[in-house]
Length: 322
Image (cartoon, rainbow, N blue to C red; front, side, top):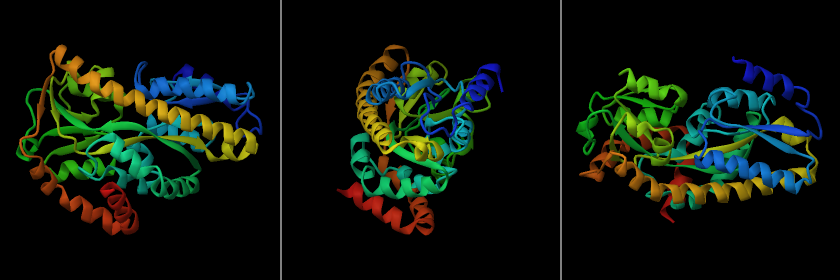
C-alpha cells in the first residue's frame, strides 16, 4: 500500500462511523475524463450544495485508493464511504448482480436502464445491504466489446482458445468459456501491461473505457460483439449511511440520482463520439458476421444462472422484453 493510500485511510479513520462526517471519500478506478470520473465530481458538487457544506467529498480516482475489489472492502468497512465500482467486483459480494450481465440480453444501454431501475434494483439493494453496502444507483458501464492484438472477431470460432482478460466477474468468464475462449480475470489497472507483454491477446470493455485508457493503441482490432451490458454500481458504506440523519440521507440519494442521470447521459454521448475517434486514431472496428451464432453458443449461461437465481433471472428477462 503506497503512502497516498495509507494517508487517506489514516485521515478517514478520524471520521469513519461519525454521525455527521465533514469529509468523505468517493473512490473509483477510472482515469480523468471517463464518465465515471466526471460523474464522481458532479456528485461531490451536488452533495456539498444539498447539505450546505455539512458533507464534502474527496474524490479519489484512477485507483488511488486501490482497485475495485480493494475499494469495496474499504467501503464495507467504512474506511471509504462511497465507491463507484464495477459490476464484476461487486458481484463477488452480491452474486445476484451477475444477472444484469446475462449474454446478449440488452441491445443498448437505455434498454438496460429501463429494465434495472425498478424492482431489480430494489432486490439487489436488499442483498447489498446484507453485505454492508447501500446501493445508491446504477451508473453505466456500457455494452461491452472485444479488442484483439492482431485480428478481428466476427464468428464464435474466432474466439477459440483466445487468451482474453476479463474483470473478476463470473458471468463474463462463463460467457467466454461458452464461446470457446480461454478467459482469466485481472484488475483493470494491470491490463495494459498484460496486453503489451503478451500475457493476454485480447480483452473486453465498452468503447469508452477502451478509448479513455488507450487500450486501442495496444489492441487495434475492435470487434463490436456487444456480448453483455454492465453497470457501475454506486455503493455507500452501510455503517456510514445508517449514521446520517434522514435529511442527509435524502441529500445523498438525491445527489446520487442526479449524478446517475448525468453519468448515463455523458456515457451515451461519449459512446457515439468514441467510435469515430477510435477509427481516426487507427483502430480497426468490425461488426459481427452472425450475431445469432454468438447468442446460440451462450444459451447455456442462462440455464446456469436460472438454476442459481430463478426468480431474478425470469424477472430481468421479463423486464428486458418490455
